[in-house]
Length: 184
Image (tube, rainbow, N blue to C red; front, side):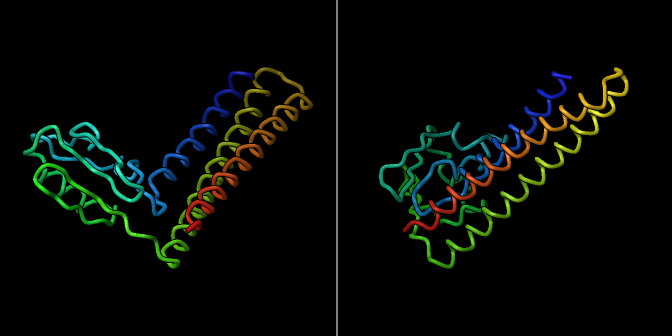
């Protein structure tokens, strides 16, 4: 039973980590190199993560510089950024690609907060689904192993406590990211 509990707790932890990864790709008016994490560049015929084809730096609060190790990749990197959903036009000076992040408008900030809340709700639904699966597995395993109803209820209470804990962590993450977005 303990192994079963650990398995479901790990699944909840993965859901929370996934939410944090999603939040790291949402830009908050400041240059964050993580917005480029999902961008792949055509590197001699194979899609390669942008981080593996050049050096990414943040020289100023609202600028990202990408310096490819192979100068012939400048056009490919520029093309990949334009095709992505970053929403910023890259400038290419022949050696370095610069991405300048504009200040977010109030309207755009509110849209981002709505998106953050929606992603938070999706994460909560995932956690609740894991709880449901865990409760079903506990009942099934309990009946197979001849565990008493009281012990099964205790395990289900433990799962509920873990669920509540993860829901609170998600609410905190949503609140923190929303505050970060709304801070001018």
